[in-house]
Length: 135
Image 1 (cartoon, rainbow, N blue to C red):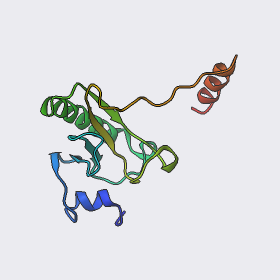
Image 2: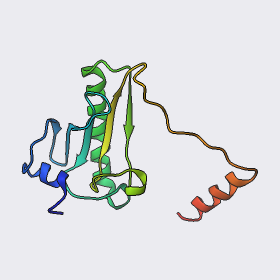
Image 3: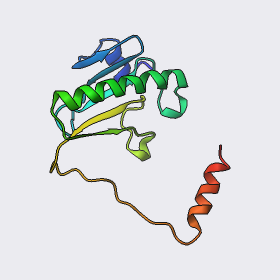
């Protein structure tokens, strides 16, 4: 995808602050960090979401994510790490190229978990069945 900003980054057409690179993946600082040290991990090959990414590529991306997560935690002396990944615009995916966020977290950094809901009586079984029947 020639107009994808992450593909341009992979090709070296736009600058980035790379923290890791191998044959299949690249990791770089997010230009709009949740906290300083926030890194994105992407496959070099273009895939829009986790759903269209081949499993062998996902294995490479998650291995890089694990390696870089350890380095971010240690490097910025974070109290914790949040790893996030969104698919499709409705879920907050801004760049349509698979990417994982590695966000260093600190006590009292003000970030909260997403709101949590509840299921009505027997509703949990209905949703469980919907998901199982879609596999």
